[in-house]
Length: 382
Image 1 (tube, helix red, strand yellow):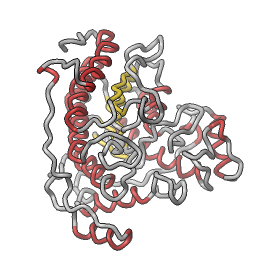
Image 2 (cartoon, helix red, strand yellow):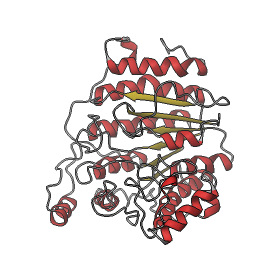
Image 3 (cartoon, one colour):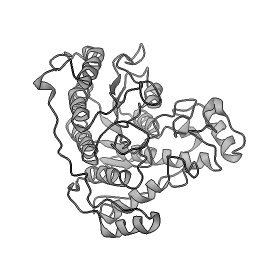
């Protein structure tokens, strides 16, 4: 997976893959009896074309073979997505991980699957964008639908709006896309507001919670629990596919949210609980953004793996010494000592009432008013 490499200095550092796998292994998560680790395969062109156009896949192949033959009209060779030799194979391998996850859910050999190399949610049908070439999460959703699943809920907790996945299923009433992200007023891609609710054939199935810059754990968790469980329960999906970009962390260099690893772990727990309650426990989780490569990404995604494995790692667990030594020797930087950030997690339940003077509450209410009635829910009380 580390072949997905845009070059030195690019924020999407491939080291985050290696560090996550090493930390999960050091925590014993890969050795659990009920956990299987499988290598992602390179997705075929017909598989990729289930959500991408054949012309786009062909363009990626051309750039992959000749990085000087950029195609900026399709987002290939831009500052965000620099062209590199082998781009097609690297991106298609990340896609293959999510397709493999969907196959395992469909054949019943797994209830939960994690592809922390996936979550490339900005890629649309015809264009790469925001460090994302092929949209593996959308591919997993489409494979589930093609395999007989009637409804899928896609939940995106990345700091950036999941615009590509939303656009691919914009007019498909079988897919509920929910994105909690920093407002497009202050962050790329500048979209994802409450009034973006889906196409004419699927109104209410695109859901956006555009959180104000600076939102922390309490506001984020309040917003999630005020919107997501109600809509998922009303939609009644058969599988949840989730995207767990951890760039919402307070130290992430590209965003302006203020979450902790503790809050991100709580978000993953909440998504897993929804799968257990609403989807017969069927859940595919992917990675996504996350640009504090040493301090945040490996811990956040190791928590995600542990939650999916049914063996949550307590936040006060010391980070394994062998992993800390590896980080300090390879990168010359100090590694975190604990698996959490040692913060107090608390949030106000929506049931205590709506505060019109609170920017997060105004965001939540805008979303509830836009989509709750389309699902038979009351925006004020449900």
